[in-house]
Length: 251
Image (cartoon, rainbow, N blue to C red):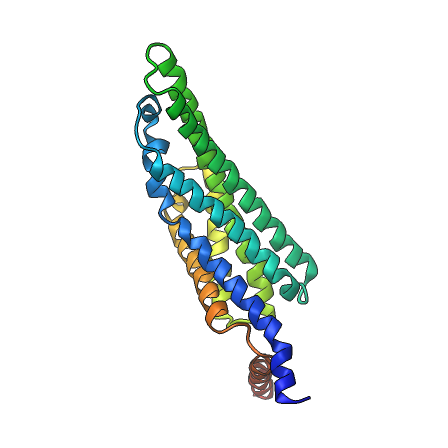
């Protein structure tokens, strides 16, 4: 086989890595949403007052993009990582789809608040109390979907995809290791939040969030810039590891 043939054969893998990397980077466009949502989620009285909803609408638009991009990462990577373990790869696709679905439910709850604010602006009297109650309920729905969709699901994603990439060595092992370290902390923090446990683990949830964020961003950059590691590089690593193990056994 000629060098040209090898390059042509590897092109699809490079394209897959590039698309997956771009999808991962796109998922970070939602970073401003919590700031954009802050007023409507935390000051339920706003629903009774007229005002601009442009910030909230932009936040909702960005979250829709994130939901679709997240699913895109799984669909793009599935044909590659299923070679390592098809069940785990399918699990990764499933958790990504659930994550996207929960994000969209959260978006719908926020948009429902926007609709109420627009349609009921200026309403006074006893209706105000019911509007504020409805706003509080919709805000609670968003916060719960955020907890499960954008905290628990990324942790499960990291466990599934991280383990697949760690074993396959398609990317440097330090990248999936970050996700595998942060995932258990995030899962524990979600359990604590569900059962309303006032525990220091809620404080260290940020410690778990940081490795997950770094893992996903670094994976996106690596796949976009470098692509998957070549079989030669993987074999080289495996050979080096075998040599080390041989030395240890001989010692």
